[in-house]
Image (tube, rainbow, N blue to C red; front, top):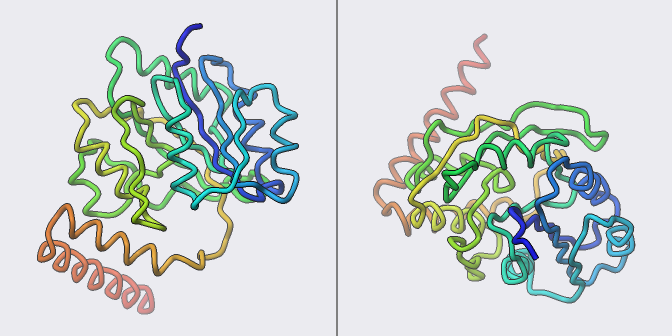
Length: 249
């Protein structure tokens, strides 16, 4: 059996109301060089039943887990493809030829990491805006001092390079994971393509503050306390200056 180029992994828990557009976006892909893994946390709704309606889903696991990143680790362990794509329930590949464009971009060079842009859509799949943080022209592990510059779903990593997620982080293990991937990568390539439609749920998550605290700890771990403190002071000055100027206009 030929090794699939992509392992697409969707993590779900009681996602019956949001997962169908995600499944449909994968099923519609013109490039079929993928396996599609759905890792479910023992949903009590119709999530798994819906997933079973889509032949594009090649592997379904539904069992209790220890949270999102534990489920992602299960996905990595079960994957066989050359590259990993994490696609959350509610999010979707941007166009039916997105995988083909990525495959063409990979070409003969086979970069360790490929990344691109993210569009924000509403629950009706209507375009809202591009993601506020634009992907930088060049991305290194030091780039993440400025925050999560690339959406996790638009950050595609060679499977053999990818570590497991650090489960000591409950809310921001993806931030830590991306930095570790970049530290290990030899070649990182910007596709200059919009890769993902990200569902804008319109509310701040309950865990937003805890997530920011974890990100701060991660940044201190990799970049040092003094530089991170000074950088956050600059963030604060920029934020309040922008708000003040906004009021004066």
